Image (tube, rainbow, N blue to C red; front, side):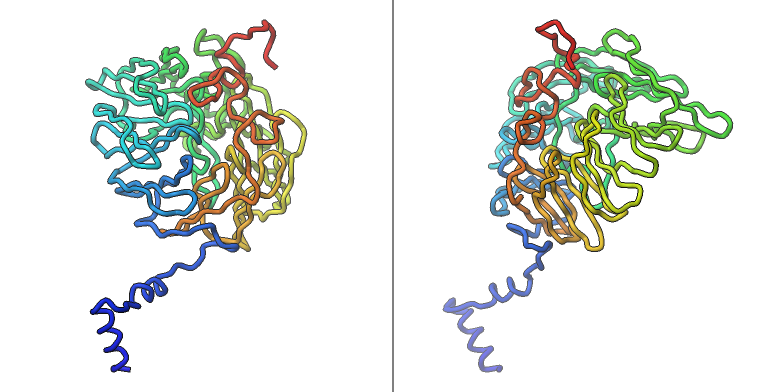
Length: 469
């Protein structure tokens, strides 16, 4: 044995034959993270903070660096030192914004090459959307400028004045006054990638909320909430959510106003939007919901999905049912017997599909797939949101990190892998075209071909003079 080892060492030292790299690769080989196996599996330098599918690449944000990998093979394309990273743009025009904490400015990188497309030296905050990128620059504490950019543009589309920003507006996507999404175990919060920009955004500044029209940059409102109120901008409306403590209970009232005129558009009482905790009804959270819809709980304990624009009840659950995922198209809820989950189209009574699932199963809705994370056995399932057709089913304890048109990224620790859908989930399109409905409706195209008219076309004139249905 010693003689054989000496011969191998001699051959390796002279470069004739070196078995050690292959032997080490065999020892260090990772176990597959799913069954059936993924298309590719790679070990990255650290546990990812976020993973996003950007066109033909996978952008991985880590604690002190960001890297991009080929979606087809998983091989690393480039790596940069950065404290934060966020993806803007759609499937055909993505960019990666990167920067350092407590340092002004950011860079926009090409996700395929890592080359710098645009550099900014003054911005203190960046917000990334599918069809827009916003940044805020401040000359002093009370003089800030909000600028809107096409994701790959070189000149701002518009600018707006904001009288300062609070200390939370730093780095990428700091919190605005909107909705708070439902979360699911083993599904990353940003699994669906960047969303289209809402028609209106609410910027909290010094205890007030400044409502900005994202199509023009006009500041429509500058509102200070009442003592028992919380303000939120949802579905093109400014919501005043009041929570009053009386007789040991919290009493809620919602008033939705048109920010352009200040007139009340709708109101509801007795609906709990889960904004308050149990201590004196203090409202410290945004309402639950997604994009243009809100999630509320009625006095009878039944959950409901409310249209943020006109206040309609789009879905009301039966006693014991529980919402697990929602967007402005569909609701996925767990049955009262906790043995199945069901998807329903909002605003109709039509059940789209039902699947057997445990009482601890979580779910998430993305533009490309509805995800269900189940336990015992641990399993991830991707389904077409409209038809329920299975796109992928894998036995795994890994988390769902990102979903794209053709597949999804899963990860466990430092290992990430790509699962290709059995048949394409399609790209966002109009309802009824066989694909997934395009977010935003059917109005004039925005920078990425999306809709800038708002959830009910409230920002666009009706050429026919009729009422939009």
